[in-house]
Image 1 (cartoon, rainbow, N blue to C red):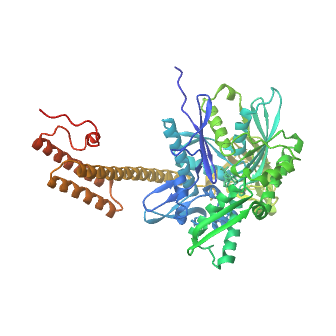
Image 2: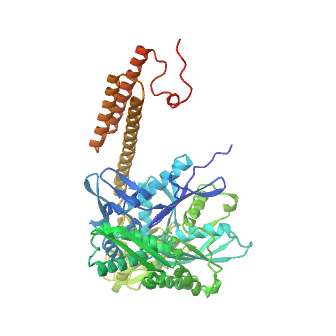
Length: 637
Ligand code: AMP
């Protein structure tokens, strides 16, 4: 039998929901968790005793808002002082702290304040997806293709790779979400051979918005342009609804709920449900019992009101459309298919705006908007590990850079070295020189962004070229080379042409990204947390086992024919065990196991005594069917 290559999974690591898929036996499967959910909330909660990930974390969020972390994708790869972070923290119930320019979330866990990098939180979500896949597939998974918004910056991509390493997952490829969706769509919507088809992927999720235009021809997926907003999605729409209802509440009850994190979290969850209802109904009821100071809050929101509250945000999705078409050098009529991805594309007004923009063209809704990205990532994972099916054999991806890359020059002007939407991999070189006589060092500041002045763009990092021999200004020739690999990861180097001196910029030097040692330290910490989770789970199992053993023996002692003393002894032991369990919130696994052994041994000795004294053949409680009216036990000789 041919040897099967190790399986790798595709993971859609979403802002609000994540999804994992695998391609095996010639087909792609979305992997459901143990409760049958095909997507998992990207939530992590910390309690005094344990760490929860996914659905259990989200469902306890309103009771434990300060220690329930979500939106890690809105933090990853960003700096503490980023304007978007400063705006977001106003709405999050958990704390975000500054740790030497890098940001961390702060929660109370196991009785003390602890901080975690966004990479660590994302790693916890990734580890959960890995675990879900492993228990479904029955084998260990160590490799994955993970998707990110096409518009993610270099720092955000690097940080996602770090999150994979922390979760013990080797990231085979960082794939752009719209590209993954196009693969999923393209695999099922084939064009006649030799015919090219332009697909526009409109991806509006929980926190990010992406537009990508791809041309697909004979299995080759070529990204022509991408545009979007890493900070626009369903959560922003919800926030509008929450703010509106908080104002309504204040108007009606003269009470301000904005500072009450638990109330705000409960209102937010009600608003998410209402928002989803409004996609199929013209009005939605919002009902939160005892929302604040014992006041029950019941109200109705109409679709028209919701659309009015979000009108500017909805319209903001059109701007990147124009930009993507312009960059792809296409007209609206060149687009063959408009594919909707991401839960927020279910909003009717979004669909209407998009349809109107394309002069009434029908939108493709044939693929599941929540699962398509993971589906495409699983196909890519299968290709990269040699597990592809014949239909995937000739598939080939050609991606592009989402943002322009360059360096700062005199007057703070951005010298763009690689233009946005350049096909990957790409490498460009530009010449620079000194600005002063006998200048022996040059400081290069590397930026990404589209603005003419670097102060409006995003600083990726700085590096210095030293040892330039004395010369009048403008004479030395320094070449700066930018190269971007298939994962959109940038490497920069500078060379003094005369001396051959070179300097290379490693992205890990930037303040926004974790250093190698930090990642190693976190990997160690994650392993400790995992070990704690396992021991916590074992403890819960030991408690459950002791509880059910106690109940079972109590019932048996009550029902079986025991002498009064033996019955009392057994019932007292059961009672003291139950009281011990109720009174000790933090019992140890070993203690539970010992108590269970004591119970079982006591019961066994009672039974043995009974057999010896009365010559009873069966142990008490062994044949309950008989006691319940089955055949009577056979008479002994
Ligand atoms: P995604 O990131 O693609 O998983 O999308 C998640 C976002 O889609 C969340 O903000 C959800 O609240 C939102 N969403 C899911 N279903 C609907 C719906 N029927 N109407 C409006 N928004 C939805």
